[in-house]
Length: 435
Picture 1 (cartoon, rainbow, N blue to C red):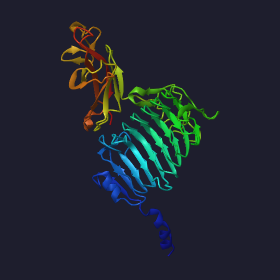
Picture 2 (cartoon, one colour):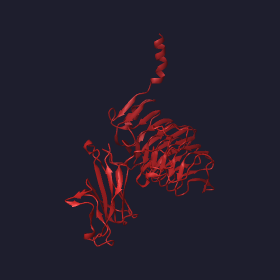
Picture 3 (cartoon, rainbow, N blue to C red):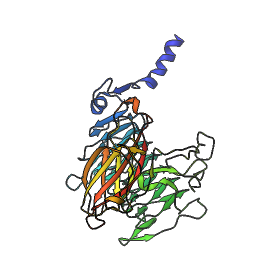
Picture 4 (spheres, one colour):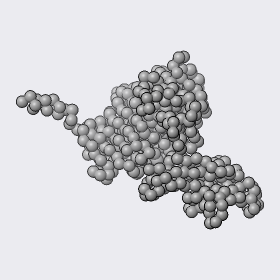
């Protein structure tokens, strides 16, 4: 009888704790969410899911890691939506591909309450990358509860990183970098904000822009290089600087990323982020003090991509990582002639091509100071923007034999007035394919 009584006590604890696997059990994320009960977890296998997802009440959405699991909105609308949902968790995935529809710029994650009455949300978004959307995270018409953003990278979105209208928000160890608008926007309806151990840098407008009525606690953040100012508040509609309280461990220094322009936010040797986070946070797995930002310092870190060789004007770059089965590894071009035909050359050898030693001096053909740095096997034609940029996604086949192989990519751009050949060449990028 005691055993039966004990099981009866346990029943409420184990009810609704099923894991629904995608695509093993359900072919789509939404089908799994629709079938889930309160307390369940929808678990995503590695892969790319082209969906727009509506979350469900008290259901966890968990990927297999932000380098492995992608939800892609395909360039339309919001990607992950919590409309009228009070409690949820989103973890370990990358969310990208929202786009403007009407007046809505599109969000990677949109949390909607209701303007008519008090609406409370208690939610967590952690260890995610939210990249390449209109807005990163938008919270609208939510009046109570707590949203926790923990160890997320929110970058390269075309408007704001985080836009809040919420009762309470806790942001800890996030990297909010390179968004075209504000890093963190606290609107008139937002409640208290506690931000600690975050990097808020290189955003196109303010780092953190708040209404003066929004209570803000700032501890151990590095807020730096935001075009409209780092900590600003609206007074009579005009952004005015405010200062964090003294003695709070705040920094305003170059975060010392490995390569901010290429989206690699690992702290490099000597970075001020290393072991400078809030001491109340758990130690890192190497027992060192916690970092500021989402990415831990790794003593033996070896970037998958790096520049090599010399160009004669344009600059080559990259974004994301060359992972097996992943189509988001991007080869980038900058500082090129505007509105000009360009060709991306991709090869697998940087020492010899068709019997020619590499690098091969093209000066004899009229391009003085230019060199061919890769033996091209693949070519992709583009036209540079008015700003002299271009980009090409490179899909990496899901073939284990490619692990450890290297891609070498270089851009060739039409520039009739630059030299007799009429072309200029970028430096090269060497990229090691990762599993």
